[in-house]
Length: 392
Image 1 (cartoon, one colour):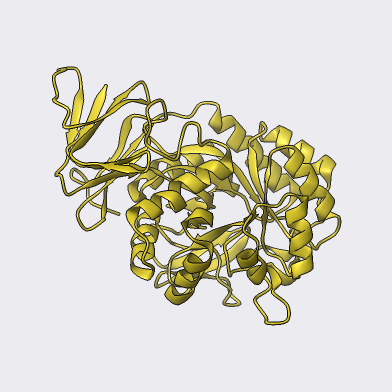
Image 2 (cartoon, rainbow, N blue to C red):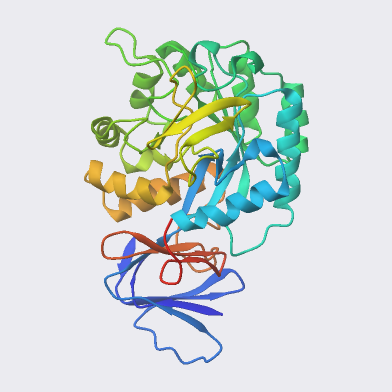
């Protein structure tokens, strides 16, 4: 058993001052105010009353970190990701693929499935797979390898979903390509989220996709047809349709602070999902790294292909939180909505993650008075404590 105490706790849309959370067997079993510690068996993690305890962040779009990438498809890869991400406040995530050969994608899906069967607490939990591509538009490929882009095939996807153990949660695709509208209906019927991305679609295309069941847009602003006053494109459609959640890379590079604020004003906390879209070079030095079989050049906080195209990010979730607070008038409560509640609902895991409530997984983070991340617990076990270790 463990107790997190002393700090303000954000639970059930309310702040509990000088509260405490009791954890037993990976779950939250009690949340209270001014609880006295009486059980000698409890490990107590006490914080000043100026600190804040929030649900752990859920990153539904991340390729890699610390030299590891989903497409490496090894147990060591996923262990590295799961071990590294709590240091930035992420307690669960979707392992994200990239457009590649069928063989490479199938290897990654099988590896994720196998790893998920034996995950340990005390590390970020893989909730499933975000299949980014290969059913996208070559015109908006970005850093996705064009040679592996293909039309969607339901039989192929059924094979992939079987290899993944039913764990493909989100598919990024371009609705205007091939028979993708029919594919969206299939995904919707089978409770897989369709996220519109790497798309050159028109308003009419996006309207048809929404009617078919699409509920999300991949990395808003990036890899999509932009806004025009006579053709809203993908970007304008993302703003127009209230049904659409929008991923947002809040690093100041992929999207300027002004446009982050613009999106926040239009979509609001209810429909934004904070992601990192990070690649393996996150937490590493400047240099040349691999993404989807191509060289990516990392320098001064940005990752680019040889052609100068942004190729994933180096963003840490803790910095996304800080940036969102600086770029907009969002409060920590809004960060919880965008970084935990919304992604939990899109992944279909809100019954156990996304908020601090009795019976849910003990996934939590603690921020200090400057909203700097200092502590992470993943399913009841401490995964990071800056008071004992240096920060990333």
